[in-house]
Image (cartoon, rainbow, N blue to C red; front, side, top):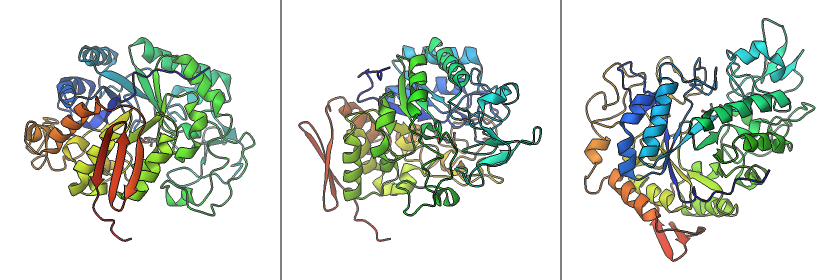
Length: 449
Ligand code: NOJ
């Protein structure tokens, strides 16, 4: 099937919500769907077009929701399906579209399929190869009940589904249809590079050069030519597109931008992770933007998300405004992670950490108001607030020179931009051209090392 050719997402600004950390409506310290609904007007003021919700499904939280135990329900601490329907209706009433996170490559080990349909997963009597899990350790774990080994590309609590099995494709197609029928406009599709691996499960060779994107130490030692990104990805993508023909599909494919072609034959867009990881240097930024532009408007641009250091932490607080202008000049869709519009910084890690891979720091609650609880909750927040007295939506709203006001202006200006982007660097100045419009960003000089 041909890719969906909707251009209504071209130029769109999608705001990523990490549901546990956006707004708590019932005082249990955990953000929830009713909380999101209560803050939609902030997003309308900001001018965004759509929201993407990181996973909202029941989960034992080994990977903070990316270990899905039931794809067609809402985690009780976040709400229920009626609440979800209300959120969709409220978003649509305000002209906001809604994307869910679709996690096709694995389930939670507590998903009923793991016991009822073991044939949906990848099994071996002994670990058949040297594959490593993304967060470290072997990619094969022993199931105590059967004594056999199952494959997991991420945590051991996340067994991989086998997309070569037609029943897996059908079952996941049902999941997509379930949410489309409830009014969802599209999906951010998780970890697509993991859907198709080598059919013969051959060893990965040792890496001879570093991968273009950051990887965990152990994972980075191998070159993932067999454990990822198999050529038969088409089979999986066709099934996904067929189940959601009119939905906007944006892929998380953690691979070099130049390799996104086969994915983009079926998806509307895919993230260019080289931009998300680029240093704040004009030359490198121009290069990665040019590489993305080669995909003709199908790149989704983001400068941060729930997995990596926050924008203002990574580039420095003094560069947050320049980064905003950079992002909002790129052709759409662009993705803005909650809190970046007020310059939120990384927080600390919980003790013991919620995320064993060290990502608590990027997931601290949204700061809508000043005060110790940041307007996030009336209870005990699941992760501390970072610095609500220093930065919050209400303190920045209408305040001349605030980052929030700058984002509002840039998002509004974005409506006047059209066409592809051309990027080049002149010393420390990054120049972006969209048709008649040129933006010159004087970046701080690169710091050595
Ligand atoms: C990418 C998600 O963004 C990340 O949070 C998760 O740990 C992995 N995929 C596995 O689902």
